[in-house]
Image (cartoon, rainbow, N blue to C red; front, side, top):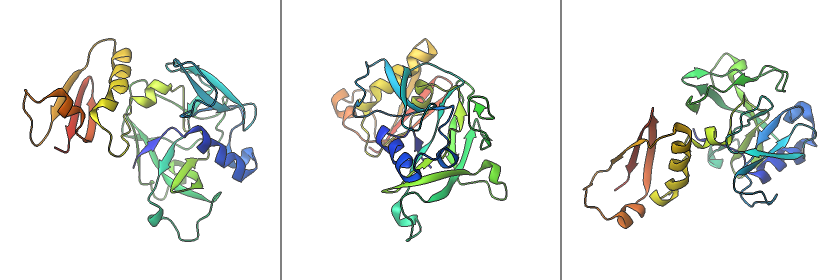
Length: 235
């Protein structure tokens, strides 16, 4: 199951449908990363936006590598609308899954604030979202439905996690091409301090394949183990 940082406008939607109710959205005393795709706040390239803490609509910014105890990850997921209940409407809540960090389930914080029980991100850890752990609600993330199959978690799930940490989780949108990897690979190199080993795999591959041709190939997956990056294509 794919998860990602909520787009800035996607963060606004739960604010609207909950009436800024902190008991439903849990924005108080905790900043949430947002992806300001439209550069609404006119931030320099080195800075990223975050929301919450002082009010539901408050916004702030940090550098891409900042890790703070009051800055965290509120997952968003894209679900197939056909798999959702036929009567679901904006503002409804539903369980979206269980978050795993290095293969261990992350508990849902009961007090998702700076002084609360939000788990700390382990630098370099792999994050995955899977079907919810049954019979144990403390590992079941609740999300707020905002329409078009998008669900945004009702609280921050991990703290002290930077924007770069989240980018290194390499979520892949549909039909991404190799040329779109440049920024992601650069982020990996910035964090690791050296060039990672990159392995290309495809059904048909040759060393003399033109770079332009490769850049136009659609990727099927990327996996990262230590500093080895495996890029697989649908060719």
